[in-house]
Image (tube, rainbow, N blue to C red; front, side, top):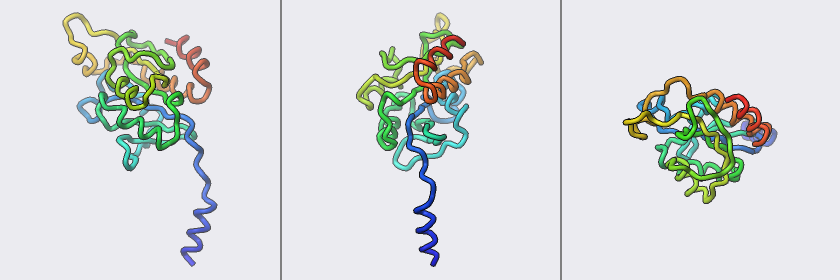
Length: 194
């Protein structure tokens, strides 16, 4: 009798919506890196996804909210593609529907810009994504952290503490807008703000 009830419930359980978008926040794992400039991507994902959970066989934690999967790779930044490519494949999300939130040296702190594709500009996390996805054609939400002051090496700058000007909430909003309203509408709204 119990088996029949279980079969009945399984057949009539609502089907979750298909995943239309994958939003990924780049960063490094562990408390040592949590509040560094390099982790603005993961912190932006945390603005929207509060219940990330591990996915068996994938190097990431994920939360599905409607038709959007929000993810944080559990790999180090330079290996981000090892998490994102298999996750996108498992979810059936093509590269052009992957939104990657990452730190950007070439933008001043407080600026957020959205674009589709482009060069990696020396960003090792993006290089890994491009290598594993086989394309540069994914959406980037670029979160400005500015260039280091004279005499400070780039690795020390990006692994340095946040200073409060990184526009993390705006980056999270940018990713949500891309998924709900499309790239052009998100660019128009976010680029006017910051």
